[in-house]
Amino acid sequence: MFGLFKKFKEGLAKTVSAIAAKTVAIFGAKPIDASSLETLEEALYTADFGVETTEEILTEIKAAYKKDKTLRGQEAAQIGAAVLKRVLEGAEGTLELKAATTGNPVVIAMIGVNGSGKTTTSAKLAWKMKEDGKTVVLAACDTFRAAAVEQLKSWATRLNLEIVSSHTGADSAAVAFDAWQAAKSRGRDYLIVDTAGRLHTKANLMDELAKIRRVLQKNDPTAPQHRWLVVDGSLGSNSIEQARVFHQSFGLTGLVVTKLDGTSRGGALVGIYRQLKIPIYFLGLGEKEEDLQPFSVDNYVKAVFGIEG
Image (cartoon, rainbow, N blue to C red; front, side, top):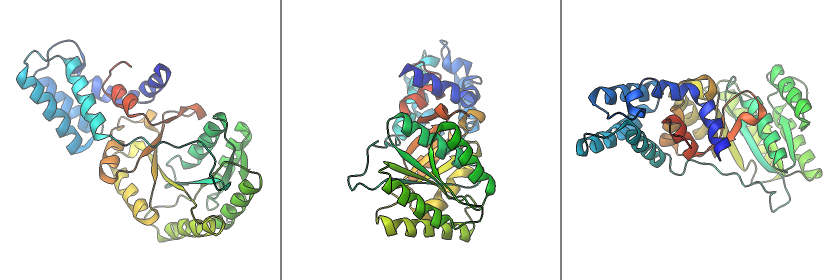
């Protein structure tokens, strides 16, 4: 558990810095004051926690401060963490690592715009499942972008993962169909489908995603059982609208928030969850395959507020 917390703390370093570095009094042993509360408010907005969450955190800290003028920074941090934990109640997505009872592969469709980290996340997820003793096939269905297919094939070679792919410009739905058949015939537990990533406002992308879904359902009416949006965490609150559009079109069942190690806006995932109540399954906290970590509310809030595990 400590190791996982350390990974969260390191991966969220820029977000932590955006808050903690500006609020020495808040996280220190000294009593807080009006000035330090203003500093905390600024830091929370900077980290993109949004108006609602920021106001809730400040309201509770101010209420505690009103009752006890000797309230210290460490105590204020604990209050903030408790509020954030309450806001994120139910946010942890839990993927049961077991094969479908039907004997069919469980399908996870990875969705997102270009640049979100969708392709690398697909590979990292497959590796993680493999490490957990499950069998997985990757489907390289982002055939619109040549680099995506080659990138996924490169990851598959390096991590010794099974992959089904085709040439650039091939019918992505046909690749998904073939990949499902391969996963089924080989008795694999999971099929991870890396879909195309053109702009979410483009009708052709939504049409393509819908076609992949229809084709998969010819094999299994319940597929894809999971439809996860991969969101670039550095986009901040702008990612909320992106998530809303994909949710309306494709009925998302989960989120993966990437690139959190390179941004100070790590509070944005809170806003997405508040708005859409879509569970968060994984966070991307670095470049390596092991840096894709299951989302932990406890580790997240402690890391953000500088509370040691």
